[in-house]
Amino acid sequence: MQVDLKYETARRRMIIGIIGCLLYVAGDFLFAATGKGQRTDTIGLFTRVAYLEMSTWRMIVSILCGFVGTLMYYMGFHQMYRVLRIHLTMPGDQIWVRLFRAASIMGSVSWAWVHAMFMTDALIFKYVVEAYGETEKAAEIANRVFLANGPGMLTAYIVCDMGLTVIMMALVLKRKIPLKNTGTRLLALLCNPLMLPGIVGNLLTLLPWPLNQLDHGTESFGHALVLILGLTLLRQYRHRNDALELLPD
Image 1 (cartoon, rainbow, N blue to C red):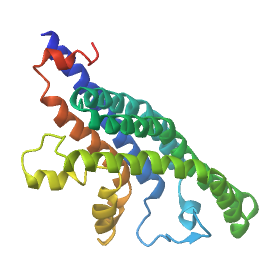
Image 2: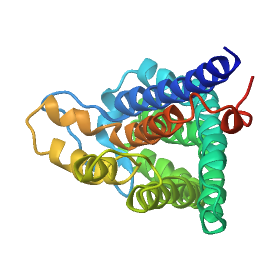
Image 3: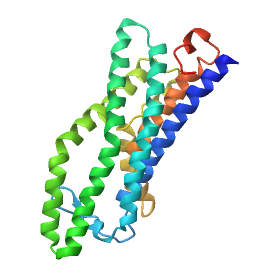
């Protein structure tokens, strides 16, 4: 009974993390989805014309999704880190545990900020245009704010998204994640923040509206798939007292 309790607690926390990633997906969709025939072009580096027609409530909810999702994200990824500590015990494997820890901490720190940053830039553009009617000048201001936040966002992207992608692909290719056959391992190579949007997301953009809007959030959904692989890894320890000692009560 004690083993089952520890297993269920760990599983529940990882599911909470998956739900947090789905909140990111919702926030991404609210931020980026456009209506049929709506302009999707940008002014300068970043500012999209569609922001002028976007309801403010969408931007507010997107920020909230990032904030609440980050709390849940930490619970799930911290639990997966503990599972990896149990599973990867060979000396050569410890680098993957440490890298996973660094990537998950960066995600826990940065996800709420990234959502708020994108929405703040959109709100700056929208409000300046509404107040002064200067579309080009408003876009210039918004782009400059975005560039000022750029180094932090790039760091988060490299450490979190790229880091998790490399780590999870390595664990799959090295057969550290227990998968049944080659086919499932090939599918598992998509379970990370960059391969999913890079392949599936780009294919979705080729579909007609509104199906092409499903591309928004594929990067965040890739994080959810990381935790789904973590659940696969956790399942094999369900009846092992020695392994589950590291899991929370």
